[in-house]
Image 1: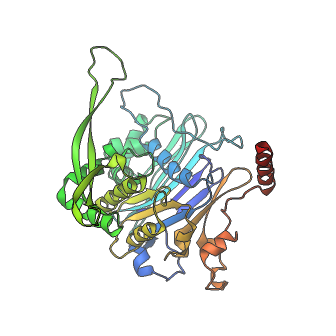
Image 2 (image 1 turned 90 degrees about the vertical axis):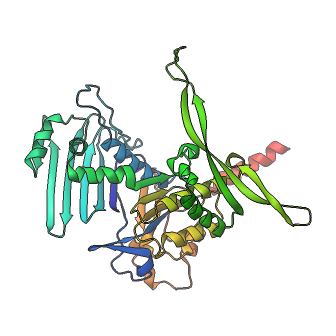
Image 3 (image 1 turned 120 degrees about the vertical axis):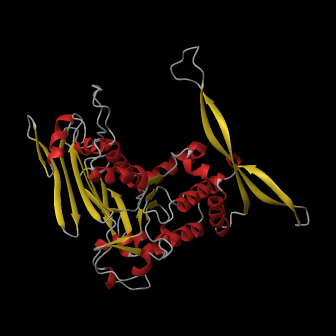
Length: 425
């Protein structure tokens, strides 16, 4: 489970920025439904990030992807090819000579792992991994570049022996994973199998989850969500199809690559002119609405992840969805039915601020005049309890009390409108 994540000098995040799923210590509201207890840790089940276009909401998700790609930036020990580090610094303040820094805390199988890494375009500069259990905290390793060589401190002698296999542009944690270190295996399993990003970049037809629609029990659960959300779909049929893709090498004797995908048919009730049902008609999902396809994908994700301890990142949550559908999905995320999954969501829909959410579940991203993204929680506003109870978060947000609102340049707007009127004459 994700506990904390911090980023510095990556994409639009210049200064150190922290995001947390830890529940606020003073909040008691909806504790039984909206939070989960893991030993001494109390985490919220979902977090919603609001902010204007271009503020950096999606970049927070991308930063986690960058960290993941850094850890998987590893090839065979016999391969001398130098890998490029995923270095994407903040470019608007001459930060290219400064390191990117990540810190992530995750709770896995009764242990809290804290991992820190700093690197630039050429090499990893610093790494630290610690593990906290009921018996105490252990520092598993520290790796530090002193300007000429690496200095390692390791808890186990076996880990010390592996330092000779670690390249400048490779994370030591990656090497430990390759050599089956149990703690590294736990962490890599989380990055590989326990986090999921749902965004517009997903190619749905080749997504492994869609293939599970061929399984009747899985399809039955997906259909429940679709019917509750009133999509009028009576049934879903999944079938395998082959797509041929030309070999990128281009040799004449090379056969084109065959890629297996899943084609989906959606079955709707058909009616005569008097409104009487006359059977069903089939619509291929490529011909259906964007909202229907997105809901089908999200339904597959939620059914597959049911109480598997996954952390699911959903970008542009309200895209193609009516507010009532968003509310229904939010109710699932924060229900007693959900005992172990986390959801981190970005949205523009202001009405969602007034859904049953705790202050520690609401986050804002604002972009400063220097184009730096600033992330902060509603829980940071200490005067929340002093305000009138009938003034909603949405109204206060629109009034600018929490920042992170789009600003229209009125002067330029008036100029533009006047020019448009002149051009018509």
